[in-house]
Image (cartoon, rainbow, N blue to C red; front, top):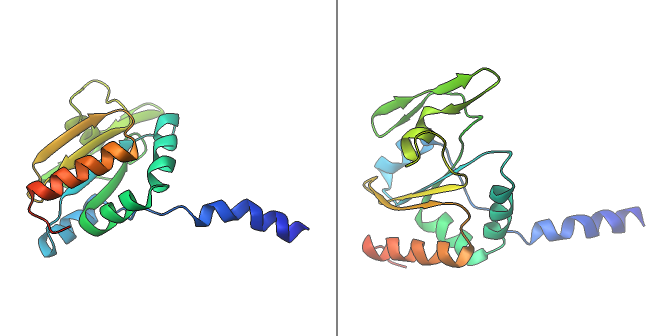
Length: 158
C-alpha cells in the first residue's frame, strides 16, 4: 500500500517536460560555437506567479521542445544570485542591502531600474539584441507565438 501511494504521488512528475537551462557562463561559451536566440527569465524565489508560470510552461511539451532545441534559456534568480556575471562584455555584481539585495544585471536588463517586475522575460536574437521584453506572467500560447516569431525573423528552420 505504501509503494502504491508513493507511485501515485510521483507519477504526475514524470509527465512534466523540463526546460534545459544554463548560466551566463554557459551562454558565453556556447554562443560562439552555435549562435541561437536567447531567453532570459528573471524571477525570485518569493514570487508565487513565477512558480505557477514555471509549472504551466513545463507542462506544455511543444513549448519545452521548442526552447530546448532552438534557444539558449537562462533562469536568473535576481535577488539570490551573488556571483559576478559577465554578459555582453560587461561584468555585473550583486548589490547587497543588508540581509537582502539585487544583482546589477537584473537592474541593467529591466526597464524599471528601481525595482524590476517579476517574472521578467527578455528575448534576444542570436546577435544578443533585444527583440521582445515582457513583464509579468506569460502563458504557454503567447510564449510559443513569440518563440516562433523570433525563429522566423532569424530564418531558423523549424
